[in-house]
Image (cartoon, rainbow, N blue to C red):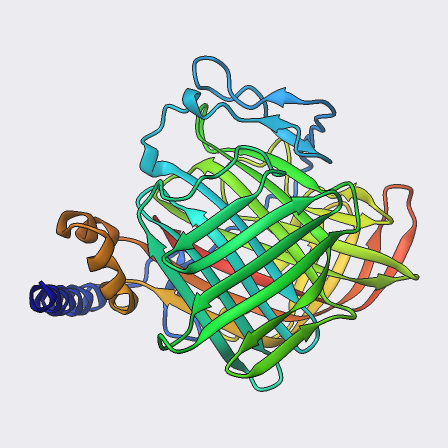
Length: 409
């Protein structure tokens, strides 16, 4: 059995290399494409129009879908008011995506914890980055079959990923989230262990429904005002997250098209002796009733309309510029670290052993179409923001991140 498995891995690897070489030979630039600093050909993400959108606020609990499976609501809320009856979803189950993701950071280190099911596979992943050295200390992704993880339809119930003796557990208590994990490192003799407490410093956050069509949608809940406390243990080293450490929750449920692209940014820090956090982004769906842009200050969301990003794909570590169409946000973001990840045909070779262990040949060939191309810069924001009441705040060295993602799933 072991010999057959090794032969299967070798055959699939040879197939991948051949297909990848053929794919690369056919790459030609179209008018809406550019080649970035890594030599990757990407499609330009169009800027928002600048025209003011409706920004419809939902203030009470409501059903996300009608009985016929079409969207019942589109807009945003300060709370996760939208209730999903998954039995009403008409899309192919492989198009229904679910995840719970946390990016955490301070001025020295950053990382992420993710549990997700994208319809044709599920996974748990963790990573730790060191900004000064520019190193990825570790990055681990463990694959399991779709449906192996129970995902609640609300943002408050716990969730757990398990694979053998490996686990990522997310418990949710009043005002905080407790995350513990133990995942195998580069060898079976080492583990990556973490224990985090994410404290919710604001009752308000950003819940947004973005339609793709009458029945296809993305329901996201972003909490950028999380205080991060805890430790990670890896290879006899302890990494502490104490003062001035923050995190953002990215909770998502939705029926997505096969190919997508997006921009997402978040940050947090002290402004005027109070915690200020931000969430910005665009690039997918129809945002006419709500964008995902907002500032959270003193526990209150100050909703923004459209925000335009200016950044140089030929050098992602050059300063990025963010301006809102209402004149309420003007920020410059200076990167100190760039996380670059490219999962395509060649990138999937690194997962071949896990794929063979968990999926059939037919399923693997389907999974080989999966692509994820990420450039995620960590750094500092400087500039100004204007609150709902007209108060102008100066932002100085607010730490956070900004990412560009291309996804095929």
